[in-house]
Image (cartoon, rainbow, N blue to C red):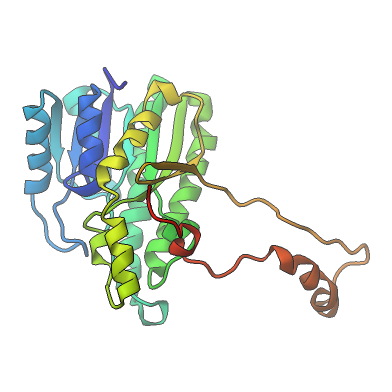
Length: 301
């Protein structure tokens, strides 16, 4: 499905990114495997993970090149895109998958923990996409696939930095879709459920949590890759600005914020009339303080 295309997959040294890179190569794409080789928290650097995935792709008969530039700075993110142009002559697909975690309850979170996660997830997605937008615009085609999360779309505990970044990515994707549609460039999001290094950091402090983790382990990163390949392909030419979720063998299209209910008062509102009339009328449409597990409460199928 991707014959003749060039794909950049960030954070492709392991987990979801690795499986996406492998399947894209199998489907005919030439792949830039980007990974800085850092720890889950973003510390350290290693060229090993990216080069190992390139070796896997080559062993399977595919074509790939390794890149270890960081997505978290504009200049280094631009080098990732330039790497694709230098080696393969074009860029057709960007999968913004790189990420780190610094989980902490909001009232205990440091500025550094906030900044580090936003820089990799949200700024990184912007920087790589911005650099790729120019060549895609010039060639009149291209596809972005961004990894969002139900932690941002729905909610989760102790992840204010990660949740804010992931919900921000959904907004970024929609803006890219709107701004670049006239140039033949598309942008969509995937919220993945999969057992990976990032999810393995979940703290198990109860039997209920242990049972939940065992269910998550059923959902392998390889389950995410087929949707990413499809969204990157010409078969998805009319799919733009959407948010999908993958949960084992289930595919979902997620809602996007729209008005649910309204009230109107011709003479305008006062704080008192809002309390007495508006809020009681609107309250039936309020959202509860759900976390992702409350909404996706059934076993993976």
